[in-house]
Length: 546
Image (cartoon, rainbow, N blue to C red; front, side, top):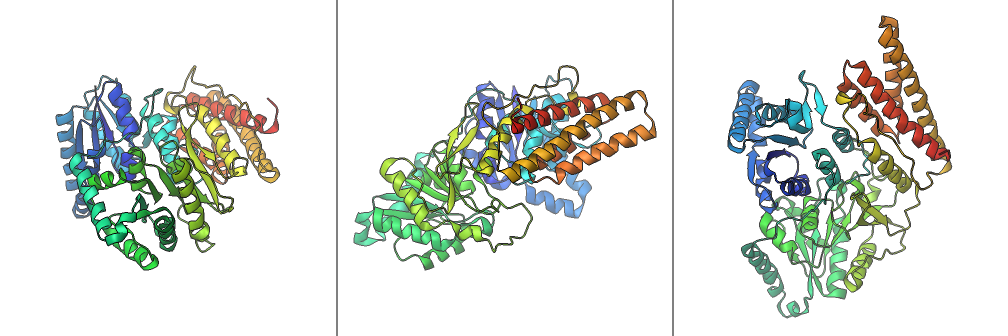
């Protein structure tokens, strides 16, 4: 079977598709991959890819500016060529934008799959027959919600990709292709040049530690002065040469590091393409990094990672998919901050975590192969592990396991993990309801937070019950009055969840899924019953009534 995967997102996201690709390959599929042309070189790092089809995002945007009809025709011709060459029988689209949904639907319509309909052949993000957004299952809808709503992401992105793929049970193996000998030779030559440039001091080099200075946004970047302090201590106290990594566009960061540093370092910023970067990572004892594509590359190559997550970045959803990695985030009530907001605290999170804390972690790892968290109180420190269900999880090393935030993440993982394992709203009918079980551990938060969540869950239960009652009346008496009452309750429920700091993900899920149910009142009522079960069991668990 030929499966075509579409991922027209960033470098790191593309790499994190690897477990899904390998999962399809283990199931006997040939795998084709559609990606942006500027990331096409990265596909050489992926295992089990049989064909790659780069799409020029820049050229497409320019064509759309000139004449959208010509541009659309060009994309259609490109897509037809992909279908003719690869002959996909099924597709998985992991990019939620409307334009890519349209492309995926076009490719699916021409695919040679055995499914009865285009919808059966397309998983992930698509469009329905009326051109409205449609997601293949609740996990896919949650994937979209987690990219929009900060703080509702208790699952790693790799796990969400996996669940959206429909692969089901099975090992989620994130192992990228090992660098070729020629690339390893090139990386070693660059490192040796840096050692030779030190003269007699070069004899002191006991190994290399990578420093990835850049990030997707400046506010998500640990300060250069902190990196330089860490690098100086690595050299002075451990004999480890700091190796600066990054793209050519980050030359200014390397220059800034050099201004702050007083001891030697190797500068590889802008000097490696992706294959040589991968090879350089394999030469490191450890990588210290911001939340970047380089971090995900290192994770897939089995390189030990110490990562910092600032501003909107948090390790629960975009942390390295490698057991034993260590992630830090500032121990501030405002972290992580929402997308699209201006920080009212002058980006205090950027300077919260000191180089001393980072060095203590690095030294512990180097000396004993384990992370030992210092008691500075600056950071929430996590070690990556895998839970019993196969999802990547985090274990607190800094005493934050019993905080409200961690307890809430664990509640979401438990309840949403069950809630999302069901058929999509558009297919709800007899037998579609899923039992929601309470957790085997106490469900609690601090008093104020507990009261707030209980109140919102209680309102949710009442409104969902009212919606169901009004829906049954509407089914037998479809008057304007009964319809307006039903829609009014639907809107009250939507508003409740949209305005909730804790349950806003339910608002997004409800909006998408109830729209997918469309004019099928029976499917809508079954969907409401599923939400009612979730809210009822969650509320009972919080109140200790099981």
